[in-house]
Length: 187
Image 1 (spheres, rainbow, N blue to C red):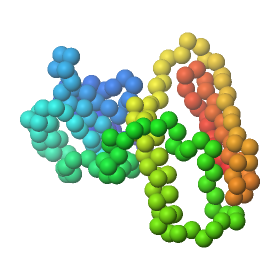
Image 2 (image 1 turned 90 degrees about the vertical axis):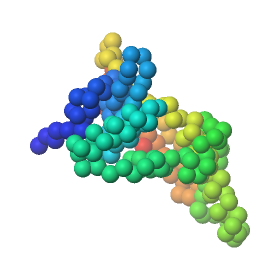
Image 3 (image 1 turned 180 degrees about the vertical axis):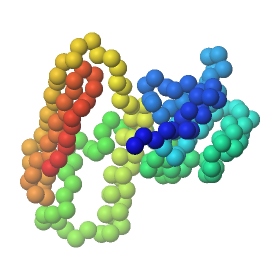
């Protein structure tokens, strides 16, 4: 069974060009100036642009063609919360999602934890993850034509670093040319 993506075809008929590096991204340009950017994923649509009149016209055309609702400014898209919900849009980015050498454990000889201190600590860890996300917003995966189809494998293990159960988390990834075709991460 094959599904025809009517919205994607409609975007092309409105003068949008599909991005070469991101298949769900459509861009409409006037000479060298970008006018509208649309990210499309099944039934979700995210649109942005600098010209409010052009944005309103685009929304009207889409509503005429498809059953749609305007949810206003983006706060949630494809299961990802926006940094502004947590007032983290201007935070200092970090290169790792957790402090180097930090061990999180649910077991062991620990003193009873004050609930407010515990909540403060977990919120600090969550903020660290959000700061990591902030620093990786421009990361992506690029698939391009490879000169040769060289097979490569990568593997790593943390060697029983879980203090809860003394088990390792290990992972592997295999690429053929520029394409990753097999990967795993498990305890």
